[in-house]
Image (tube, rainbow, N blue to C red; front, side):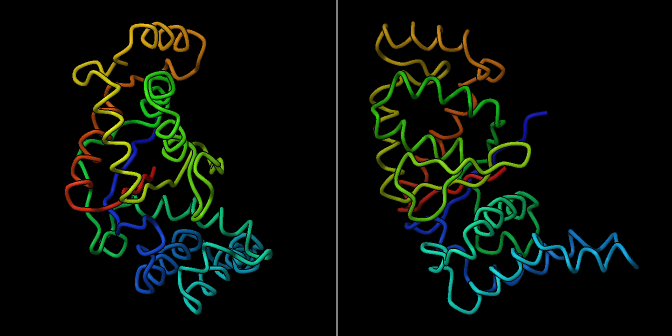
Length: 237
């Protein structure tokens, strides 16, 4: 079953300001509990020495010491742990636990499926300018702080993971969706030629397993609210 995509409001600069020390500390506690609370004896000792778990915890400790700004240019020794951390943070934000969501609000109650988001990628690719298509990659594939626009990082366990848009990018997406897509109920490209290309790409793509309209509807509501409030958006599954 395709995972739901949660869309949260963030500070204007996106992800990094969201990771205040209190939230990072809550994440650290949650992450360790998730991976060890069902273990005992030898299994617990093995978890305590697991290199991947230790690398993520060490990186969180590094961020607690130096601040979340360190996400922007992690040392080489933390590069792999950073991607793993972003993947795990996505899980943290979708559990809807009080520690995870303190001061964090959903931009919309609509939660499109991951398959729907992938289907919307086809529509945006054909109907919208390159600048919004590039940003859509961060919605679909994930994004690490300070990566160039359109440079996806392919965060994966069973599906793509954490992405974000800044407040400036939100306004850009809002304006392009309004200009280049026809809106409810179909969210089709305005240009006839683009509509034909969408239909063709759907036939050739796995994205046809989802429906683009629910994702575009959710994103449209989210960007409208975020633009009014001067906020960014976070996408987690």
